[in-house]
Image (tube, rainbow, N blue to C red; front, side, top):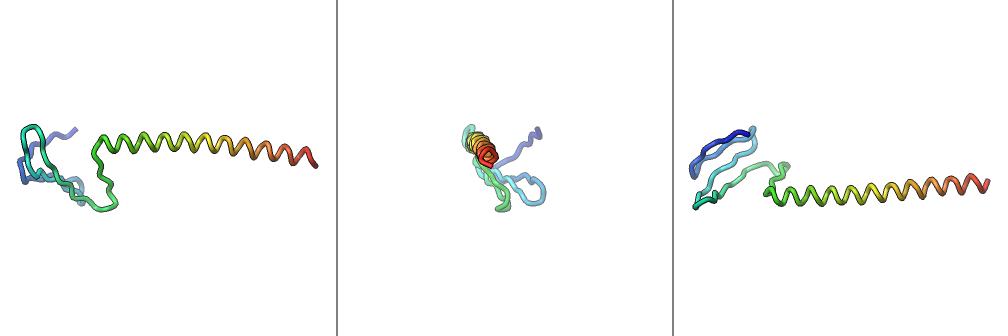
Length: 84
């Protein structure tokens, strides 16, 4: 982890397109501003973790749906073969 010290009004650059600026400091809190292209998604960490968790739940549900669909297709093929 890179650790930097910045004062209010100072920035750090991440690559060519991202700037993180310290807008103000009050007690133990720092207000930061992030300038990034629209294609770069920026989230608070707790929101990012929630999105990841929901994506995992959705993919697990999709996996179960695909397994059920595969089973139905196989059963349909067996039924068709036995009718011939």
